[in-house]
Length: 139
Image 1 (cartoon, helix red, strand yellow):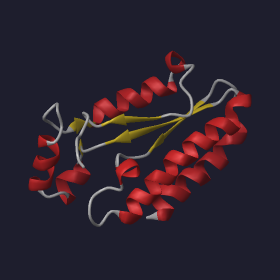
Image 2 (spheres, rainbow, N blue to C red; image 1 turned 180 degrees about the vertical axis):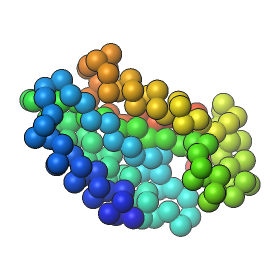
Image 3 (tube, rainbow, N blue to C red; image 1 turned 180 degrees about the horizontal axis):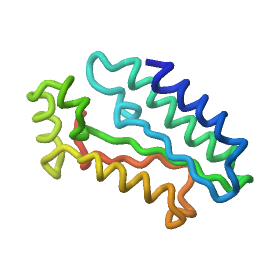
Image 4 (cartoon, one colour; image 1 turned 90 degrees about the vertical axis):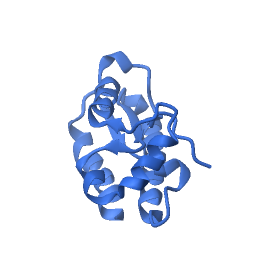
């Protein structure tokens, strides 16, 4: 879990940085679980995604002088093949019911946010982790 969700972000960033010009942008994928600890059984996943969020904020400070922006996206429950295969329908229904919008997110919605953050339209957005979860409400 740590190799997949944390070390890969670190290694890819380290490999790409020498080739990134000023004005470039990095968009990391974190998770809502990184903010709230996730559900039962997701300790390692939530820990890694929380670390990605911290890495994002710290890297934005490190790379600001080079004019490279770094942001993160924190999806909630998104309708993907992963959830189609591994998440019980009753869990998905519970999450959708706890969302004021009353549904799961769509992959294209996350992709649109990533595209925005990578674009020049987000030229003053730096060091943030943006939730995209329909305002899911859990205690």
